[in-house]
Each structure stands twice: as structure tokens, then as C-alpha cells.
Length: 382
Image 1 (cartoon, rainbow, N blue to C red):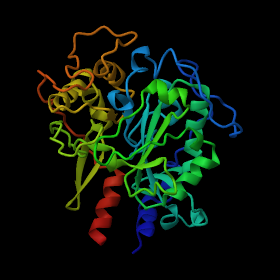
Image 2 (image 1 turned 180 degrees about the horizontal axis):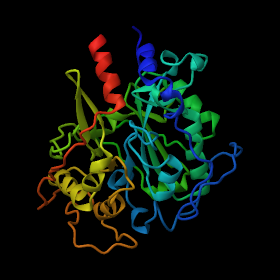
Image 3 (image 1 turned 60 degrees about the vertical axis):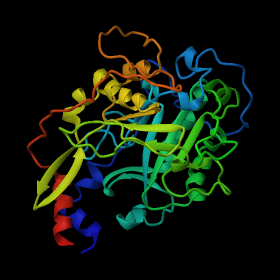
Image 4 (image 1 turned 90 degrees about the horizontal axis):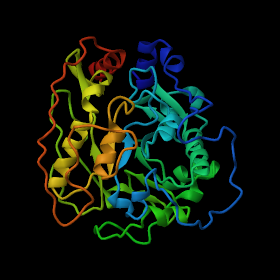
């Protein structure tokens, strides 16, 4: 039995309606603003004067891109009232709130939806487009274009999990369709040997090249020099951490200038002898505390690795932004706390850390969800 048939039968059409995720038209009235109108690309990037602030802090302007920590969301597009959602708020809100790193999953909807088979553009889906479908990639990329147009001192990074192996040129076309490619940063050399020297945020802003794009599959830099192969530039902490497990910063032997610090957990359900992982919103208030995030960051610091992309689920719960300010050694604008502070500081030849590992002792919800049932039945049928 085909995957789409089984999923559609189990969900009873529910996935195509209740689970379809739609971005709202307007952003909030506070913080950084998004323009509501669509602005097609009409001008090439221009050289700009030295900014007074970079990503919200003047102290970050003179730091190289790889010496800055960025608040990052895991499965950024997967938001809202959905059992497969990793976030509570949409991408426009994430941008306005201060998120500067985004993880997006690319899928081909043609294998799961007859109505979408005519489209060759990547879609943003979680697990399957029948379960959580946030629409074509270009639709979401438009929000980034609008944001960068309205906020000229901000630098952001997009990571792609290229599940269905789209070519670099296909991905690039979605950027070109909304004028986002003009902001893409092109490195002057490879980082596969770990020796690449990144520009400062101020330099990237002055050049108006304020978007870094990485993909987890082999890139084609000859055809699209600004879509970078992430393994040439980044290493990651363990990706899958279950509720009740311990965050760490496993020794990373590869010399890469950027570290993705994954700081989120899954809950496990067992149905028909199959174990299924799903996001854990109930544990976010504990996982996303300043103490928990900084505790893991200190472990990376003690290993002489600076955590650049501090990646969480349900970012609006907890203290992500305060923790990242601690890691960057800047004063959060409205914070006053006695919690741990990051002892690693800006990367140097040596690190000291007194923080112990951050351990979670949290109870998982007891009720199995529809996504667990779907996955379990699929496993049973195969």
C-alpha cells in the first residue's frame, strides 16, 4: 500500500485542512517591522556605511560572523496548532522577535498529493506533506526578502535539510523568484580545511550581503556559489535528545569555523511495537531556560568550540534571547538575573568552564498522538 494512501486514510482528509499551515499577512506592532507590501527586486545591492548596531548590538559589529551566537529555530516553518509543529509562532514573528538562524526542510509534494504534482518547486513539509505542509519554498522566502529590505543592519542564516535532493539551481530559483538571492553571501574561499576567515557583521552589512545559505546535501558552488555545503563550514552537537536525557557538546574532531548547538528534545511514543519521536512543547519551559542553554554552551566552550547557532524548539517559551546575549557577552536590554552566565566568551586560544552538564528530568505526556499512530501503522504494514 502506498504511503500517501495509508496516511490519507488514517488522517481522513484532516491533514489537508486542519494541518495546512498558512502564514498570517501582518506582523506585530512592536520590535523590528516587516513591510506588508510585496517589493520585487529592482535595484542591485549597494555599499553601505558602517552600521551603529549589528543584529541589535553595537558590540557585535566588529566581530567576525563565526564569533557571534545567533538565536536559531529548529524546523522554523513548522508552527501553530499541529501535532508535528516545532514552533508556536510563524516566521514573520520569529524574525521580528530576533531569531536569526532558520532550519527549513525541503520536500517534493508530488509523492504525497495529486493536486501538487504539477509543481517542481520545493515545499516546506514536516515528515510528509500530508501531515504538515507550509507551502512552496518561495512563499516563505518572501518573508525573508521583506524583512531584509526593512531592516538593513540584520544578518540571517538559512539551513536547508534537502530531504528529496533538489538541485542547487532548483533551490536557487525560489530565491530569485522573490529577489532574495541579491542578499546572499558568497565566501571568497572554501572552509573545508577549517581555515576560512569570515568577514565581520559590519562588513557583511556594508556589502549588503546579509544572508548565509547552507544545505546538508552536496552543493554545486560552480553553478550557485552562494548555496554552501554545510559540512564544509559547520559541525553539530547531537541532534536527537530524548526527554530525560543529557545535553552535551560531544568532542568535534573536524576543524570547522561554525558550531550548531542543538538544544531541543523529543518525546517517544510506542504504538504497535513502533517507537515514534515528536516535538515536546510541554518540556520547553525547562529545556529553554537560560541555565539549561548556557550550561550546554559552557560545555562547548570548555571544548574550545564556540556555539554559533543556538537551536531550540518553541523559542518563545523560556529565555533563549537572554541566553544568547550571555554567550555573546553583551548586556540583554531588559534582563536582570542571577542565573549562570556563559564562561566561554568570544572564542580564543583557551576556554574555562565551571558549568556542569544540563540534565533534564521531565515526564513525557501519556497520550499517543495521531502522528505516532500513522508512523506505527506504516511500520507495521511495511
